[in-house]
Image: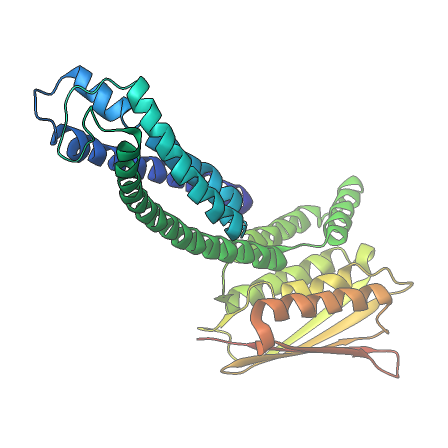
Amino acid sequence: MSNFVQLEINKKNRWVYFTKYRWVAHAIYWLWVLIFGTLLRAEGPITFSLVINHFVLDNLIIACFYYVYCLFLIPYYFKRNKNTLFWLLIVLCYFSFTALDVVYHNVVVDLSFQSADQPGPNDGFLDHYLKNLTGYLFNFLIFSIMLFFMEKSEENHTFLELEKEKKEIEQVKLDLLKTNISPDFIMRSLSQLKHAALREDHNTPESILTFSDLLRYRLYRGRQQNTPLTEELEALYSFIHFIDLNKDSNRLKVQLITQGAPEHKLIAPLSLVNLLEPFCNIQTAGPTELQMVMLIEEEELILEMDYNIAAPDALLKDLEEYGRNYKQLYDDKIQFHFENCEDARCIIKLSLPISL
């Protein structure tokens, strides 16, 4: 499964989590209303009719008020910074829903019991309305506090998830930078292998195995933060060997001289292999030579490359991209410089940090 597919799955899972979390919170709130607002206040036996009248019907209007508030007013006004209109609509809904609730109770709800804080049957509209205002305000404050903590919890969780997702996206980008293989190089290499197979070159099986080793190394080591320097050098030598096996096609000769002990040292993966790749994409009129001198110190690897012709624009562009990619990966820990000299040569200098 690719990293991008996994990120999309994480987004979907987060949405499902928040949806379930919201409805669980709402269920807890209405369970609290059922127990403390209806069942514990009942003065007679608890019947199905009592639950219908004094939980379902009795809370229908105030439930409409709550969900207009949290499903319409908050997302479309409060979260869009329309604060004046939001509070104006809150006040309007508060007074209008309370009046509607009084009319609704007188017409629809069959009051089967009375409690101390409920209006009696002889209370007028105004008395009933004023008592409802107090009840609506109390319940509205409870619901608003609960909704506030729900929103803050969701906001904090979303922030953490987005930060995690941002890091994962950045890691995907960095992995792509490290493992990115030039299409020109792979097409050129496959074309060389094809032509070698057609003319039954005795080096073809070894070339295929060597090229497979290079691709395998990219796949398994490219996504790691560090790789053993010995393995990177083995991959580099395999690359040089692959070039030498196909010297009739690429017309490039590479000579590598190393000084120092690579054992027990770590280096940025593909940093040496990726640097050699652009030179294989250049089509020249005659044979070219690339001399590489590598000095392995305790905390630094210094590489100097001497290309015997002036680098063409395509090579300069590839080298610039290499420098940008690895500085993006490892900041200023990597020192990279190249230039065309007056004697029609290209000199590349690279300094890589080494960790033990």
